[in-house]
Image (cartoon, rainbow, N blue to C red; front, side, top):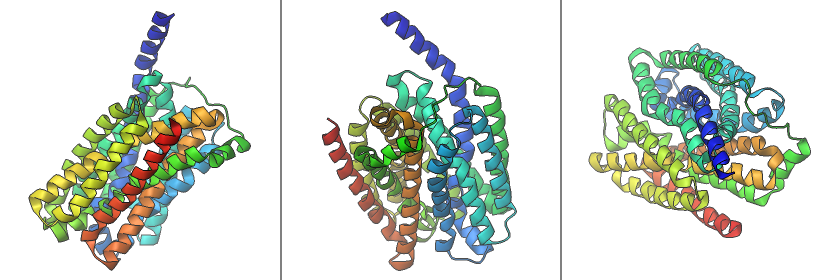
Length: 398
């Protein structure tokens, strides 16, 4: 019996690899469009004659679009086949970025970002559950991490390349390039994602409401928002921080973002492996180290060498928690609300982006109020909140 189960697990893993690759390719395009404005804030602000803080709404506005779209549209599209839904999402993604590229005003650009974000929310919510279903249970966090590799590779190559293109040819050229990534994504999904994916039964509205009544799931969502969002108080304004506080010229920003992205990729893989067995324990220590690094960045930022080391470490821990947080919610949902796992996953994607929105918004207030240098330690306070909540959830789940 054990040999049969082992054979089935091997088959499951091998069969899931092409689909996981397709998910990662699409995640690359989506990840690039989410974070590429970080490197273009100054260019967009100058071109549209707006403040850096207002331009920062392109990050928080997108995040709010994900937060709204993920749970609502996941529930509304629950009867669609997963492959059809994935392809439809990439069509929306391509259209949204094309509109962004043609925007002549900040309002139009912000609206295009908000609409594009709808595709992001559903993609990562159903993508996480697909990835988890494609592999044996003990490899779930690693499978989710593999899908999110597309997101992390976007920060390694997509964001710095998009920044370079924007500086050389204008920020609109970057959005045209991102739309082209969407075309690659839709081709990859149509070829590599099988049509016979396991379909989750549509969750009744009453079942979905059970998620909101479950204290442990709600606590997990809050941990996601605080632990992931804390970094974005500083990360959203990383370009002006590097230029105005650390003293790097704009031509160095793309290279530094590339280094940051390498750290993110390393952290994502390490986080997936660390979270396979005990996500809560792994998350607790990730958040502790993340908070320490953010506090340290406040003191290191004025110095080039120390600042670069701190930023690399910030990147290492910024995404390390993503696989653990997502597999934690999937596991909790399967335990307490098994009929609404997709919706729970979507709500956690919303929580990630509520964290981004709060972090970006708070960062903007800090920049306008007391200055760029204070963004890291205030972000660290959010992460400290996640440390305490994770410790509490560990205790009640034992």
